[in-house]
Length: 334
Ligand SMILES: [Zn+2]
Ligand SMILES: [Zn+2]
Image 1: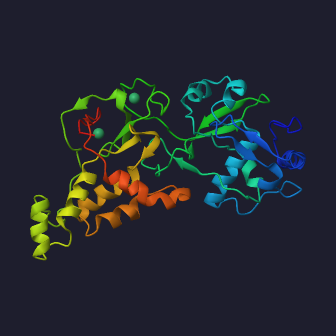
Image 2: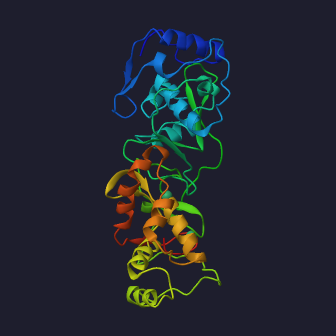
């Protein structure tokens, strides 16, 4: 990092000054966040109006996400490694820093990124809540931020404090991980749809169940076939509009646990939004006429990864039967 860059610009004028100085730097590489060797050209990727005034399209969701990554990369401050030198002494920050994942960034609450008014390169990043069904399908190169956490400026100069902006607790009273979302200690979590809580799998006991507890179906839902052969028979006679093949794929999806993290893929791969849609559709309507089309429509790929939709459709449709656990809250199978 160029020594001329102030570490922590605090207002519009300082940001203007910082970027004016940064423009003199041809290029620099940030490797600390992931080892991916992110190459940043400050003059190319981020610019601000000379007086440091606020850009007016900052509320555009995508622009904000990408801009804050660029701002983060320029500072090289808010990935996991960057916290060790500059960590504030408060208890919450000390507790949260070890939970930062290898691909995780902590967003800024400071309006820093809102000064960026030109972005030439997009860095994929998604935001999700650790306590809700909210994570899109990502790949191993996608960065993420938790919506519940942000960096705020500490009163001491050059220290970083993480603030929590809403309840971010996960798991149960018997949690072994202090009710923190922590991919370093437990990369796989299960969700109970009845309790609307994510649990660490290491805090759960295995249940003998072979399918999850589903919410009650609506009284108006059409009767469903008994099995694939029954579906084929009813399909042939025109009584239903989906085949045995579709019904089999649908049943597989319906009986998958809602899980975040995956044993075969070492990153936060989750089909949670798709499975939420599958269960809701099944309660109201049962099997759709074209399961492949339903999956494509509801897969919820990260915006930067829509070109990989087919690949991840295949992965989720090839999912194997799973181990289930008891929900410590309601006793359901999750
Ligand atoms: Zn736990
Ligand atoms: Zn439950």
